[in-house]
View 1: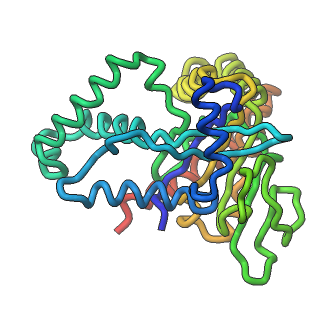
View 2: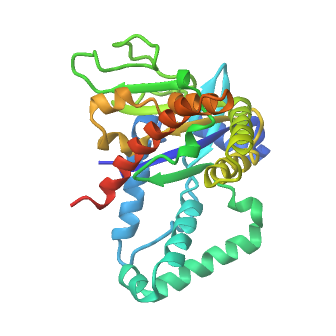
Amino acid sequence: MLPYAAYLRVYEPLSAFTESDRKMWAAYASSRDRPRRATALHAEHGESVRRLLSVPPTPAPAQESPNAYLRRVEDVLYVCPWQSRLRSWLAFSRLRGTTPVKMMDRFLPKAIVEQTADDFDRFKQQGGSEALRTFIHTSTWHVPTAWFVPFDGAERWLVIDDPGGEGRTPGSEGTAGVAKPPAGQEPGSTTTTPPRNLLYVTSMAQARRRVARALSVIRRHVGEVATASEVEQVGRWLEEFHPHSLVELDYGGLVHLMDDETLRSDQSVAELTAALTGLDTGQEELAFAMYQRVILRWKSIQLLESAN
């Protein structure tokens, strides 16, 4: 079972990387030994579990991960590095900053905590702010509302494992039973998508345009509320990448918290788009109703974190 987490990813075109990295990722894409998309999350999770169960536990890997998620669109290779070491350091820092010292000692030996913190500090001093740029954001137990903003409802891709084939539904307007991969399926893959998955993929240009529109609508009609700040944070993060990148929202392990009917009826992106349009056109009741549908859906799922 995958962690109950969703992922917001950016895939940069191969041309955006340095020459040495371009050669490395091109060779990686041709490798038969790399994790395929259908098993990549399981591979990532397995690595993390093995590190934390080792004696002593290892909060972050000794070296950066050589793996990446890949997509290919019209012969252009797009790369989203896993960055397991950097993401582990950042998660470790958040945990350490929000956990009392006595409780932290229960999770990890004090010497390991101090060594991990020192290693991260040295990394930051050597690499600067650019070294802290992450291609993947993770959210446990829910999808943040702001993550839906960069996408359109027509970019939705849903796959539900069904022995009879009728549950495999590509997109909101696709033909049930057709199991072809979504746009940008990784090269060399021997599978299409995982047997149960919900994701959205869009271009960076579209993502930035939608974020800018949403910010404008929210600020004009609601003001500087928390939602505007969250959308602005997503927009600033997207600005850090190549303008011809791809942006992906992956429900990840959250699909295992939702039954088939819940997954099929989840139109959070389309509903949030309708809410913003209603707000901008003076249809306040429509805007409120659509926004509440999104909020209440994800609140009910997030509450499962504390369920007995």
